[in-house]
Image (tube, rainbow, N blue to C red):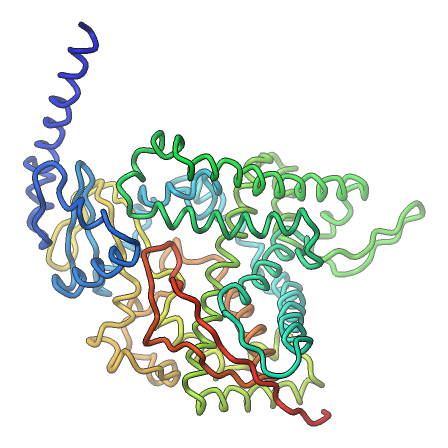
Length: 511
């Protein structure tokens, strides 16, 4: 009898909630916003019951059809997508509405509630702890790693001999993952021991699983997902990912214990410390060291440390990798611009006896403009999703509280109202004279406001270091073209199909 009553009670409660959401004050505000018509109860569910590629096309179509704002809903969940810089500024500049939406729950099993996924006081605390990691003096030491990884990438192509064709995404991702692991954890994946190789595969597969669930109805039914074959696979992968990170954390803590914490006390020093009993070998700084230092002050637990290390591994390799890939693709298809980049790189390399340093990377201004233009056309993070705690007044509409807000970075970057001929690759868009009068929220590849990307300087330095090394040593030519690019809904802008480039060695004179 109780079960029968319960079965009757659940739909009544649901219908009451549905009526309140769609017909109460919330609903009256929400339904003023334009958008596709939906069915009773399920709303726009069918827009999500399709392939990732089709969902992507639906989002672009709706963004154009209802410019500059549209709504969509599914059951009790309501989404509003915005792309006008004025509206984006309202959301991104807010110090109140900094909480991420439920879309990021696909990352919680892996990343927990780290800097990317947390909100409120926890996010503020983590941001404060992590900000010193990207201090200029620490970035200088990170640059050594980035340059070495760029040289390693170049060396692997040279060792292959002659003209080499590469599927770009896996090739670049291997090296950006190496770089972030060494800068974040102080450990390299080079050498590809069995443990490291297992971890590398797990990172890639976990990214695929997260993308598979994004914008899907079963995102809101984790108990169903956990029973599926994919859910069981995810558990196995998480054991590998978390096991690797926990092992590195334990080893790093043991190192500091064996050296009486001397390395941490001299965190800002670059010298070796000699002791009568032991010589502390110079170790490069890693983000992990700062986190361990914070844990010794009782600001973080071991779980907190793991969350942040995993977060930086995910964010730091995937987004940078795609930024490098699309920049190389655009340079391959625009040989005149590629030649200008090579000329600049060659000049800087000659002035620095064939080496790249922090200063020389900063001097690569034309390459920087090319990277920025590539991130305009193909932003690695092409959307941000927030949930507002209270009603927000935009230019034309009020977004009621507790709405999922989709901030459409890709479409504002391609808006002809702010970017003339947006489909044209033109690095000169980022000359100072051209930047001066542009709306500051019309270009946000690293987001903006209080929750802007904490690692954006790091990312730009890494992209410069790796691209400069490749362009200095190789001509790049397209095998596949960007006009044939297939994309799908994902956390990061990436091709669904292989995208290949040819690397043709440049004959170099002795410097």
